[in-house]
Length: 442
Image 1 (tube, rainbow, N blue to C red):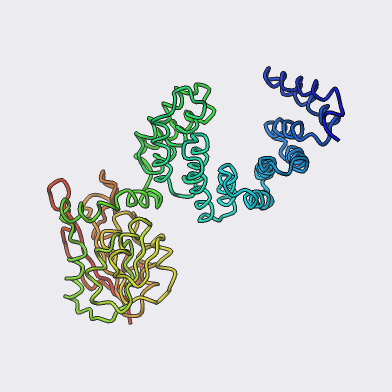
Image 2: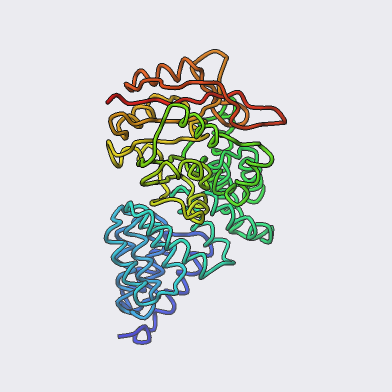
């Protein structure tokens, strides 16, 4: 049975499209329902009715219409993807994923399918799979601004705002001012910049979004208000997302800037201090916040097994190129410390704790990761003002000597060495710092 069997079908469809053009959703729904009654196997009517129902928030009804459209026109994967979107809107991410993955199995080059798959996998807690689908969608449709904004949303929510910025910037630079996708992309670009702690750039994007869309469908005004409130109260603390993105951006020039511009010597100072307290060789060593491996260079002669972990995947790749480490991976340092209790003779943290405020939790985690008699060696920047620590304008924390001692005592670690050092220079002057070696009881 086809629509040709019903002379009134085309008339009903024309009425529906006229109503949609006029913004009359109720009349469009009535006309499309009549068209479906006249031609139940007409995929076009089913799909159009599904779209109307979805806009009204009637997701399960819409999913049923898209399912019927897919059954009537099985070669068109977009119907199955529309059905999956409705199921996802209704909260059934597993059923939506089953449909989306089946559609991609039939057509692996469908960028929209990969964008949906990325969103669904993220909702299902499969972050690595979500990022893989996001990258494939970006590859398949590199110039689609609307699609890029959807991919960027996944990237930001998955903790990779830097890639979202890198993807959207050139597209927005070449987008026509009247492109209807531009405002939404600007809102997302602002969210990515905000996640990177670039408040001024985020605000600029959201102001541009409001100019492009005065009705503010993307919520730029709300985001601006929240940003201004945060800035008025001094801003938020550093987040793992910010730190990861900071070093992902910095990875390629990290060694050159540190050694030549900033006179960075924390790894060398730590090695000297370890030699002073009589640390021997044959150690199992975990280098947390290993960066490009500058610390690994210094402690490799002491190691039986040398592992390195860093939040930044790009830093880890540079460290891997040195060929020093027996194991390297990207992860949060607290998770890395908890992964193997009592496994390490030495935990090294060169210029890492400056991205943490309260040191007590990481000291506790380090104590749990050490073998009896193991050592935790690290540098911090020294704070001499009020309070145990403070976030400086450099967006690095400085810690009071008393806070280091209190955190060590709370973790049951003995202070074996504590001395003032200058781990790096900044603005032409040495940074006032502390180097400590803490030891776990035998």
